[in-house]
Image: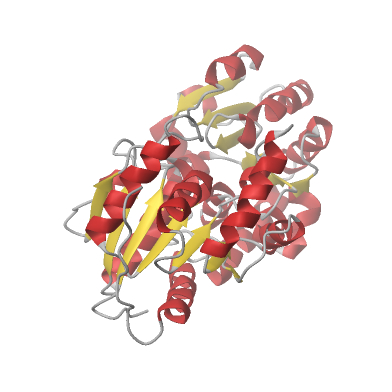
Length: 385
């Protein structure tokens, strides 16, 4: 991957934690290393801004004040982003997730080549009267979107079925296979957990504590797992708005570990990693866990089926919002060490072959080249409104 010296890319993201932030971090760093002039606009709190102005990253940052959901400050957020765009004068803008996609396309209105990567469609996250409104917005905003980048075939199909027209590219998420590597389970447990966990069957769930990630479903399933396998333990790694409610659902076999800057050791400590999401684009946690050589159990939402080796789906894929099926899958793996080892080896090989972040960055580079042509376009002024 090699960028033209004049190529100036602006990534826009409202999420500064979790999978979206990690995708933007990995992509921005890879592009900067390849010679692009890379800028990131996002709120100035959280993990994502840490890549700004670092010696090894070469990524320039621009604070953008934005809340997670649309609200009364939307017009001010769009104006603020328009000022950032005017200052950066990018060749191309790449907006990540729903809020950035909303604000960036309102600010740009087609004046600069625009890539929108939903990381799960906004209309999947809402219900009632809000869902058709978000679908209507995505259909209208397609006129200001030069390319949609979907992280799974399922996400692309969902967009097309919702009537969101335009040019699409499907580019699966990738993870840093040099950072997420297999390691001794015992050593990881010694670093993270008390001695009482040394021999316990251990399930780990890494993700924001929120409705999307489905930890409430997992805790309902866990009651059956714990009853059938009394020594088993569950660790929830992450923080979020549902933390208090989830603690109320949990029994003494469940540990809340809080947010982790690096989840690799948590994956290594686990016998099984689980992510019971209600919706996704393609979650990073299962890919990271497989890169660490651990089997995963995921719900059959967008991206999950595609993220697993085909041979593993019978053991590792369950219907969403089905605690009984989730409990059966977890028990099946916890009771079969040979199967866990086989799934772990196959998962690691699958990630190396299909989900290396370098592969993802190279595919994104192809999209940019298709939009920019052999030379970067001249910036067209975006006047704040």
